[in-house]
Image (cartoon, rainbow, N blue to C red):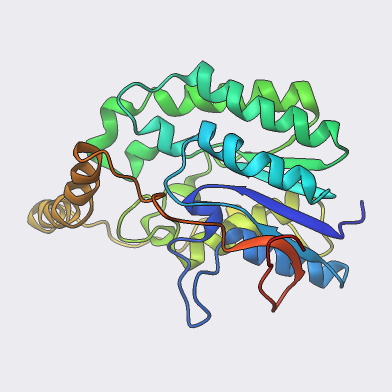
Length: 260
C-alpha cells in the first residue's frame, strides 16, 4: 500500500514524550514517519497527539481533524491515561477507540494500533491495576477485528517490559523504546527491510534488588507519582493548554501547520 499521508492520533506516547534528543521530541510516530519516507520518499506527516488526553478526548479533539487530512495511514494509540483513572471502564474506552477505527477505515484509511504491556512489570505499585491491561487489550483486539485495523501486539513480549526501554517515569518510552515501537509498526506494515528484530530481548543485566531497589522506588514515588497525584487532586491535566505539534500534513523536516 502506498502511503503519502500519515496521520498519528493519540496521547503522550504518540506525541513523543520520553523520546527527547538533540532534535527535541522525537517519538515512535516520528520515527515511523521516517521509515515510511525512507521506503517511499515524499511522505507528508501530521501528528495530532496531545499528552494527558483520555481516549474520549482524543476522539473529540483529534478525529475530525484527522479525517479532514484524508490520511492513507492513521495510527490510533490511546487508553493508557484512562486505565490509570479510578473509574476505568474498559468497555467505554474500547467504544471510543472503535468509533475512531470505524470513522478512519470508513474514510478509506489503513489504520494501525497496538496493545499495551503489563504495566505492573514496570511499576510494582501498579499491581492492583494489573487486570485492567488485558481487559483493555481485549477490547482493542475485538474492535480492531471488526474494522480491519492492524494490531501491533506488544503485550507478552518480554523486551517491552525491560526498564531500559522506558524513561525514568516508567510511563513513557525512552529513545530506545520509541525506536522499538516504530520498528514494530514497520514490521506489522511490512515495510521493506523490517523484521521482528524489535522484539529481540536486550542483553541480560543483573537486576537491582534490596536497598537499592527500595531507594529507586522511593525516588520514583517522590519524583513522578507524587506530582501526578497532585495534578489529579487539583483537577489538572498535562493536556491543559497543549496543542498538537504537527497539526497539518507536511514533509519531514518541516513543521506541519494547521490547514496544510
